[in-house]
Figure (cartoon, rainbow, N blue to C red):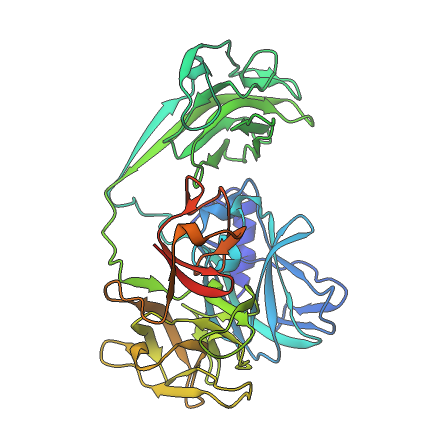
Length: 487
């Protein structure tokens, strides 16, 4: 394991400009903990005496820098009680991930439910702390990593284009179906200082009309070059009610900044302005389009077992209904788990907390290590009244559970046995064909309720996703607490 003297050296190099802050790996540095925490740099031991006011800053991030990394790695030892990592915007907590065991942990941001729900570009610091009344732990290695940072992506073509005034038009609408009706007045100010609150790109008088914009749909990011410290407001997708998307970026010490357009249905750039705090000097504005090869076709019979499929129910039998869509659920996929530790679910094996896997044919646990314990299908509220399967990983590194052998499949928890821990690489569900035995069906004409849930527990309201002309698309949903097939 790397000693944290390397972290101090890495920090010194970054301060001298010798190491890019967007390198493939960024080591943690340790600030002063809040008054209920303590850090011993000699032994790399963090301790705390209360469950609150004990956070210690381990990363400081600028200009949406976290989006350049794909995972957080922690290696810990001498664990005494639960600990946590908090993703922060200033002093506000955007997401918290808790841990209940020591060892190597790899948190892939695109896979964890906690980090999938936040905008990583808004995270400006990450903190470490205790999640229990008191405890201590040794931090032997903590770092952010982007495994692709030094590799050219296979099958990706990059096209860069200067942002120009002739890309700015008036339109007959503001959504993705709008049509350009003519050119619009537009200014582009480069290589000279723009006063605080001034226009760099867009309508010269600074107005932000929803019918005037550059349509950048299809481009993946905006790249800006200029004087370090220059800050910009990027105003996009103004609607009829005058709401819009606003992003702020700041030019780094390297003279560049980027804004990703990922996950935006369309990109209508209304205006780029300087912030009200200081003037700014911009030398180049470019939009970039990354063209990727056609993705490899995914077998539709397989789906991931997700943390968000775990609910609290009002009973344990096949007629139970959801009463809490998001109860506590551990999800330690891709991280080392100690003997007896929890991979998925609630380690207390609460009878009414489970993922309803009814309708799937198989549960496939892929990984390495000791025996895997699967606890499911309580028949009463008794905490020990359940079915338990214990299996070793087979020659293919899998434990495969046949779910068709049961009337219903309510998965309470997946653990490693007490004989040894291990690492689960993936949790997959398999369903062959369109068999929906045990699942009720319903016609659109019968739907007269206000909202539904998908199988991941996400609310679907009228007019939103999974809707076609006000009607649910065909598929499986949770309606009135029961799994239903909409035909």
